[in-house]
Length: 405
Image (cartoon, rainbow, N blue to C red; front, top):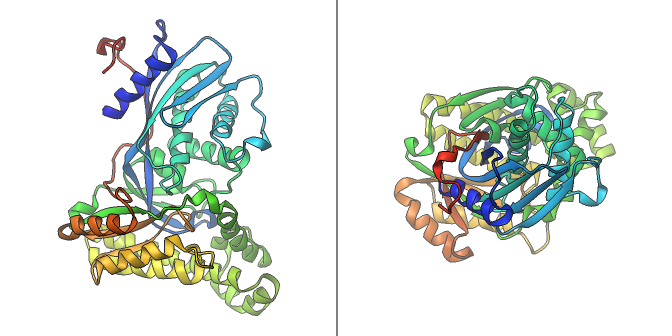
């Protein structure tokens, strides 16, 4: 509720009283990739969890043809609705998301109208917690409510946001981030059918298994390695293309095995290694989900360690070589602090961003103290799984909107 109040206060400070226009409260959580490192874009499986960090907003129509967005700590922007085409100079910017989501919502039969949107966020930017997915979902939920049109279900809305990220933002991401943010909770997702991904939700938290979930900022924004990130999916798909397919999930492993000499000659070793990671990680995702459903957290931790090793050795999304290896050194320090307990692995896209750790509850305080001591106060943050996905609801005017909370 505090973030919601901050967003409404920011709206009043920035845009003034909405003058009778109905006001929305909007919410979209961060997400943590629990399992499935770079498997979603190849039609594999993932486990993802919505987190108790979020973007919260307040919005109302403004009677113009312009969308105005104000965000505390991140400045403001305005997008005119008479130009919703792709702007190449907006790649990797917030403006690309606003313009792109507006364009996609227009395709659903809605009539676009200008509005003001004020945002408050507790999601660290560039930390691999899908602040971009949360921003997309915030915009989509806002426009879905303010502009009359058909209901969009979670999967349909996730695809809409993914198209924006591909076309307007310029990042060829999978669907995990958007769907996890929209669904909420802890969920298993299967992307083998590109048009109809399936999901299963587990009502559980890591605290029920005696562990805390930590995400550790490696001190390097993962967006600095966007080129390296893009190469992961590109090389996996190059392997699939050599074998007459589009994604690795469509390739029979025995066909891959027979083609290894040819693939090494044509694509090099790293593409082959990344394909090996895909099948290995996909199996580990399924084993970890079965373990969670059975309450077997020991097996979950063992498979998580195997996953982390696969990302380092085969996927190679932890370090780009050289002396600057922020993610790898944080993983090393996390494992040093954990000893033989818990587990630590690269989180999300990799290269920079965050490292994920599952820490026994009786070690949680000392673990955070040691990691913050090495990396700086606030680098190691504890999170919980949030059951709430992205939503927008009409604000109740009886809540004294005309004065600060």
